[in-house]
Length: 295
Image 1 (cartoon, one colour):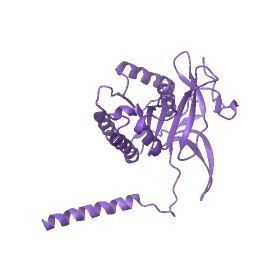
Image 2 (cartoon, rainbow, N blue to C red):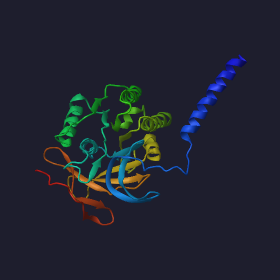
Image 3 (cartoon, rainbow, N blue to C red):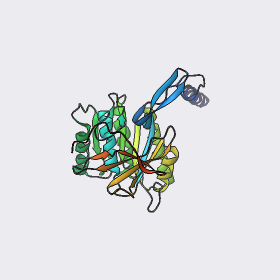
């Protein structure tokens, strides 16, 4: 009995030593800025190696983010916009948005829609990516699964794709818990997503509704996501331009990207419009567009 306890203690101590080696932070170590998955613009940093331009991230690998908006504001269209940019690197729909895929996978989990609608969104993303080798683009409709099986399946998929995970889209995260106000479920869900983003070196972007009549993400789940995320993105219908959606950076642990806007054209494809929204100035600053939209 004593020997069993001693052996268990030795195993635990060895595990703690491994964790210590893995988690300890050294201030004299030269560390690169976290690599971006999706970015908008650049910033010049003064590093020990001199001045260096780095992308201003919407999301970096090893982190999680979320998009919040009221119902029917264009959340899925926004994800399509980012997904198309991520696959292509840069395209005519995304303006100055850039994807930094480097051969990694885009994996898209939809928890709300059925197979037909999920396929329609996937086809839209492929159309926006353009005539390129899509490489690793996987899409799954999870609506028929229970919330616990959804989270297990997401982890299983990332494990099966280990070493090749890139941008992971989850539309929407509320279906991964039994109740958005359940503290235990919400905490476990967010902790799992944080762990997966680090363990599989990917960026996990989730979607959640806003509370009715509020600018806050819904429930305890939304509050926890806000506290733990790298980037919190808010979508709002424009009050000055009909059919336009304003994209705002509510929170960033790094450098905040400029707010911008998008709209959906007659072919049901979202595209960044040529102006950046500034709440103090209105639509006054022009954003360069790389190519003319061909319609």
